[in-house]
Length: 250
Ligand SMILES: Cc1ncc(C[n+]2csc(CCOP(=O)(O)OP(=O)(O)O)c2C)c(N)n1
Ligand code: SF4
Image 1: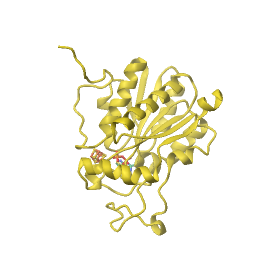
Image 2: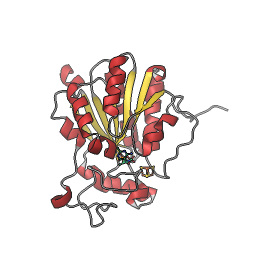
Image 3: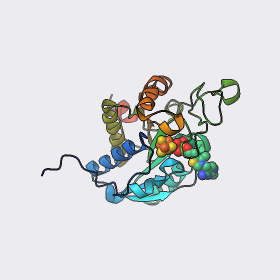
Image 4: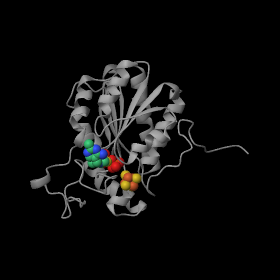
């Protein structure tokens, strides 16, 4: 019988540990499909971060290293500089990238390091049980904001792509979502373009993926997708925030 749907080669056979309805798995698949299509599995090094996706080192078939919390862009920088022929990506949550790892993110971006960052924005700390993240929305109830995030005490949510777009270093910044088929297809296009930019030596690129955490949002998988659409996407508009490749072609 003809196989019409299979696992990408760049994913191992280890079953994902993610909760039902969590979109980490979709993003893993997209990254793996892109590796397959670009034929780069053998020279790709992924940097796993701290958070629910820490076990991504068990799921991707390429070489993987695991960075201390927030340090993935610094580790990725070292791997890429030591072996410029490797294709290097980090895979980080919002707690990892935009809280403890803010400095590493901003400095790798401003240096224009030729690495790809896959940034999972689910507006919460998933692994540790649902504390507020820098990207949690105003009013969002979390374990550490039981009455909702308040501007007076917790400040405003950080829009990472918009913030990094003020720097000259990044070559490509795009925010995507994986809430429906159309957006999943767009997300894959963006991830592929990011890897292609790295292969072409264009420098730092980051794809922010709006994602679900049904477990810590306290919602069913379907409700979580609706919450993402009706809330996350409103505060975090999808789109390209920087594309030096496109600018150069104008
Ligand atoms: C230095 C250090 N501080 C704190 C922790 C605890 N910790 C583990 S995961 C995590 C947050 C992860 O949240 P996020 O990056 O949003 O990823 P998610 O789990 O939502 O995918 C924290 C604070 C740690 N492991 N190491
Ligand atoms: S806790 Fe949230 S982010 Fe972590 S696996 Fe479960 S749904 Fe996904």
